[in-house]
Length: 413
Image (cartoon, rainbow, N blue to C red; front, side, top):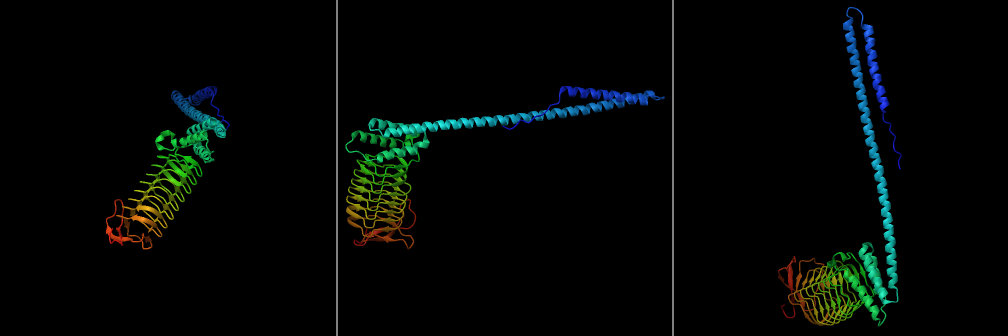
């Protein structure tokens, strides 16, 4: 702490002595003037003048003394104010230091408590008793809710637990894993209010999951590569910044209608063993379904692909529908196999289109529209027997010049 400055104030004794000295000085001067100029016929007048002069001197000296005293008082007041400011600054510094010390102490205590609770909960997950493992999950959930900075770490722990191999015919473990899924899902829905864990990444790569229901959830990065999903898998109205499902196996129905992915999404080599629905999906970034296989019906009705999309080498064994689908950039169906009827009725193509090597039994292209005012380098390779024909009005919310696709073999649409 800085040393306090020392200031000396003028004492009352010094002020009194100074006043008496001024009075004596004035009287002495008056007597001296009377003695020096009091003789002669003009003695009375000279005496009076001497007294006036002495009085003027005394008054002047008193005024000077008063000014000096006023200056001293002003200086003393200024010193007092400066001293108070200095004391206040020192007090504020001391208070700030105490607050910082207290804050650091509290932070250290909270950090130790969080670490202790986290360690105990994770230790419970390793128990051989299912109720203890479930209790550890509840403890982690409560910790994540109360300490936002730990949420992603705890989500990663729960995901890592689900990624562990599921013992066969262990009903208790199946219940524990279902509870882990329920905890994650409950905090990934925006309508959960304060319980919503925003900007969360979900990495379930390679996990074995049953009845996964992420409908209405909002996730930043979702990773499901290599997953084995049994039962119904729902991503209805879910929203992802990025989504990767490469190599996953979905054994039941896949419900992805009104799914929104703002960035890239990848479904390469995914095996859909049941029906698949992407009705009204909004896949705004690059999307890849290369070498995917769909056993049941596949529905992409009204889906909008905002970035490049490719289905190269995919196989659709059931009825496939792309009615009213919108392809805003490149759409590639090279080498796709359609075992049953495929419908593109009312679809819009605004960029490159390629169907090289497509295999199909019944391809419906009724009322297809495609943008024609594109650079010459843009590739357009329609299925055999189809070509762009007459101009048509631009579809709703679509700019540019458009034309309808016609069947060359039948001479019309």
